[in-house]
Amino acid sequence: MPKLGVNIDHVATVRQARLTVEPDPVWAAALAQLGGADCITVHLREDRRHIQDRDVRLLAETVTVKLNLEMAAADEIIRIAREIVPTQATLVPEKRLELTTEGGLDVAGNLPKITDAVAALREKGIIVSLFVDAESAQIEASRAAGADAVELHTGRYANAAGTEADKRLGELAEGCELAGKIGLVVHAGHGLTYGNVRPAALIEGFDEFNIGHSIISRAIFVGIEQAVREMKRLVDV
Image (cartoon, rainbow, N blue to C red):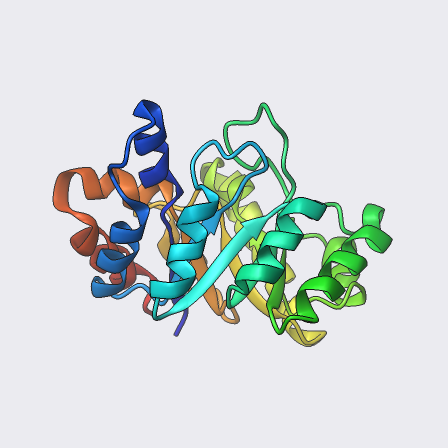
């Protein structure tokens, strides 16, 4: 049965819009756990547009499920991760002007750098996942880099419709199968919603889905606990 990771970045986005103290992502994490979240995910971006260093430190002290820190393979962020020691670090590509992560990490094209980052994190006992497109070259390179897991980028599927969505779903299934065969734990995320997560959840082999924007959007109307419960029911297959 796949697990549900809840990304709480956008709670911090609302807070940072006024540079104030509320809403507090640490409280959001507590409520998400009460709603059944198996993992709390936050992205400490280099530009600190939402999650701040203090948030991550407090979450590391208070979260009782897996804490997944999304991060660029940047020296400063690697240093912070090694100090805080989240349960898991997920290396993602990062561009300053993007609204959200736009695609998978090019592990194959940056293998030495990614390998060094993975080693630095694993040295502290941190599980390392790499956020990649469902392409065989990237999945195999992730294994070569020493990663424990991959998170397959579901954005192409989430943004498609009709036969195109079916095609993208097939690519995810093939990527999931390959990753499992070569010894990687397989996660998935990006752009998943209450309306499109179920077909992806039915693919055999996914260990965890990381979902943020859709859950936080729903939480505005029904509260975080209820929003998480509703998504968890869709992911539980």
